[in-house]
Image (cartoon, helix red, strand yellow):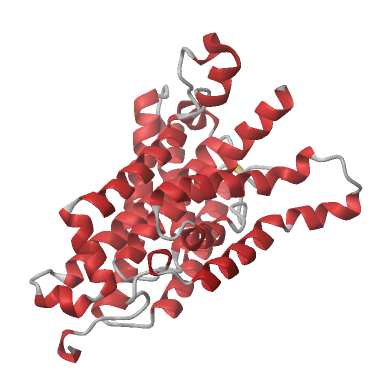
Length: 326
């Protein structure tokens, strides 16, 4: 039973950065912007938080828990917003191809993170190829004080850092706003038919900028969580892996519903670490490691075959809008 609890706990921790990325991309895509730069934005969100945390931890006489949390988070938000604004300027204002721009943002984000991450490692003259922000990570990993007194239930549901609960809350709020509020209705109208939304007096470009920047901030927090909580404050170049791409896949699997992305993210988190908990010959481990990607293909095929309107993305997804073409 302890092994089962450990597996579920690790799956939740593994799936959380995917949840941040998927929620951010859902909000972005609801506006009609297909942002394939999410992996790069998550990377920039992570390294921006690392930079802020590094300078605070290095220069502070003693680390204050509140500042240890808020400074990296604000830096992560700033980096994510600036990158999202760059994407919006290129795709919304200049109407550049969204696919190409997103891929360029991802390439830029990874290079940006590796450059500054490598620079910080050289600054501290580390003998190992990584940077450790242990004091900052301790603040992020602080658990609820009553978790230890609740036995297995507390260990399973209340023994995590605050960013795991924040990811779930953000996803639920996003689902409520998109489905139940006027802002969500207008955002979905922009994504479905921007010309009609424009004719109805909705500022299409403003909604695209707003949704993309909010989505980028949420995705960037996923990168921050990965470094500060999941990796215990350890930054290593190229250590983020392919989680950003899996987050984009989860958007389709969740059928553009933030509430379903919670289930999808944690299911993928479980598949991602499953090979660590199975006693199988080494030759079968690569096959087990392929499960998240196989599951992605299978679900995409099923969604495509069913071809229901409510399971499809916005009609204008990936298309730039030019008012004069109405």
